[in-house]
Length: 342
Ligand code: HSE
Image 1: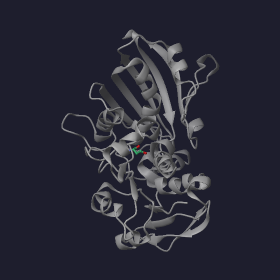
Image 2: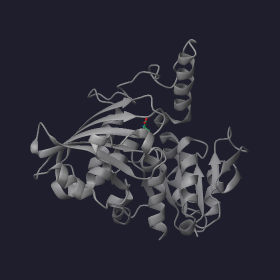
Image 3: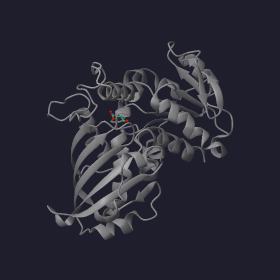
């Protein structure tokens, strides 16, 4: 039985973390996780699958005194930079694994960046109690791409993302819904505060901070993190990250060049039975991954698998979609803990 804390429990990822733990009572036990947040949220009572739980004000000494087995951080990078490493030690001297959803430690060479189906062994190799959870679009694509990489060796990836409003948390969803309602009712659209442009009936081809090379941090994360998770520097990655007016589940159009010959049928065979991935690819009958069907689902869906018109027999195009709050965040983190607990 595991003692678990969720820090940042009131946010979109925090709420999903609690649900994902509850879905694994046989692994973690029936005791509810302790829920922590800022003083602003402390004292609130959250309706959770464990029943109502009161939010506790975060205090590092309180957490250390409880000697948790797992602490999930669903907080800002600055908060993680200050607290993640200190939280890996506790008063009893037992192992506390801290699984951090921010990007604070993802690129540290001594911190594993983990998709459990791909590189779980990097935790033992790096002997680290701090584990970084990947960026959402990266984790979703990685689930589909890693089996393909193992068999056909990916050389180049061109990724275009279609990211839901909830990638910017609950306030992002609210801004989209409020704007849609105002538009439909013929009212003045409320001012956009979360997104750089109004999102309803729009798409915004820039997510996160601009880097010196003209790409955004969100786009560079796909490149940096894919290479770290796949443990190779040999894959070239270029991405365009786009915000679209969906509520939940991120989608990605992916073009790849491979070293070995590849075909759509070979990709279907390769992905068959792989944990966490389903192929939904019958375009003649309108069967392909779409965000509404992928919302709330654990699996990443892959479809529209076509031979590349650029790379011919050395490439395919495909479309991937997954729930970014689950595989792209909470589920991935909880699956890491589940494997550590076994
Ligand atoms: N950075 C991501 C986004 C969050 O903005 O969509 C992942 O859910």
